[in-house]
Image (cartoon, rainbow, N blue to C red):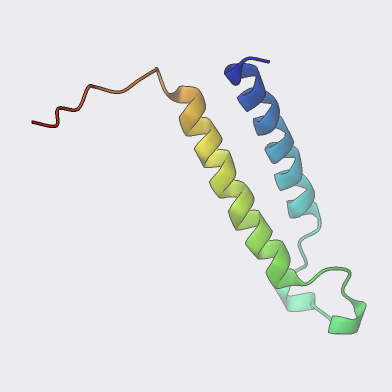
Length: 74
């Protein structure tokens, strides 16, 4: 599998996870009792941040037009 195809498929999976994460987000004004939570809202928020960061990294790699300028060590 080419790198471009891999990145594209990974991006699709990350986007799907972001959508699922958004659907499962609990309204902060209606948290209820922690005993009623299926997941910890803080963990959901942390996962969302990690997914957005991964999504941004994938987009940066996809838009990379190849190797950057040569760097001289002189």
